[in-house]
Length: 166
View (cartoon, rainbow, N blue to C red):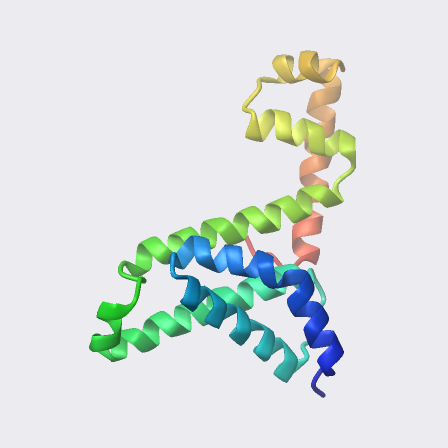
């Protein structure tokens, strides 16, 4: 059963600009980005999926699949491939996958407790050693190790709940 028009407007209003930035960073073509965003919202409206994980990650995956479909379609018609800004499929899909992974990881990190998130950010994003993280966070190094262990376990659980396969 399709979603009603008000829900579709809310989806577009709440997620449209983020989706557009996501697609635009991969394609660099504003018109193509707008087309992909509209197609993404249209597919959600037509299929009214039963989403178990994050709705936003579902939208990003749908947009990614649409970009892949568009590229494959353009390859079957070479004259369109020349006009397209999607010149190197491996490079574009690599950028799309990287952006999608960033979005999913940010969303998953926000679901962690502040203490767990701070330790993971210090160790994995800022590349601090355990001792440097302990000094920065003003906690013992054993606590840093313990929190990192439990934070990674919690993060894996959150990513599983979001439907991330990796």
